[in-house]
Image (cartoon, rainbow, N blue to C red; front, side, top):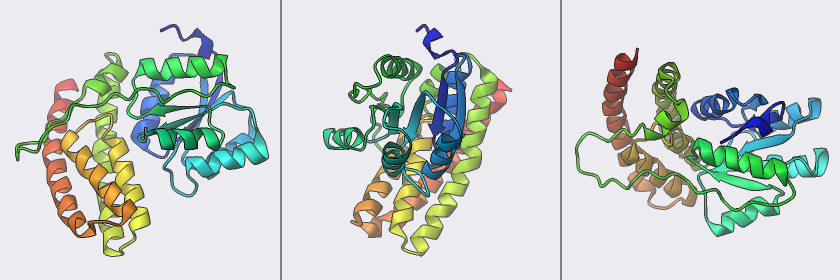
Length: 263
């Protein structure tokens, strides 16, 4: 797709996941767009107060201040017209209505490919006052648990990398570095029965697993996120964490082999 429409456009990316930050900025690097990154809603608001932007890519689940809260503040105190695109793993009609109600102009359902990103940006920048329907997510096929090594699906990463092996290695290394920290937070929040922060951490893990795809781990993260958020079947969470960690050890071996082959 021709991305000339992005040349010189200033884009604010509000996203707390390092892997997703890298993916989005890599996708925009060749377009001529100018972008800044905020790690949460509060940082996004501060950047907006000190600079002008043509569009905001706004993650929903972030620490300190989430995307819904940030959008409400932006609409009330900063700008009623700047286009805001939600980035989220949610995709139901009810949640889609909430994006519109708080003042967002559209939504990209994670994980999204380059085509979905560019088409959404094009549509929003050409007609920023018209809310968009949810972009179609690219979803990995359901994989039944077989007890075998978890499948690692790098199709999305290969699409985004466009043949750049150095970039693929960077993303895989970031995944390997950040996932242990995420699992440690899960352990800490579980021990403290802090379900609010636990579900946010599980959501963070799920987001990281949307590009370096491991369907078995993604399903576990999704289940833990749901149980913690709804505070149901909490007795199953410790066992799911144990299996999640076991799968990660197997995935780590597979990714290190992939990194060695590309280096």
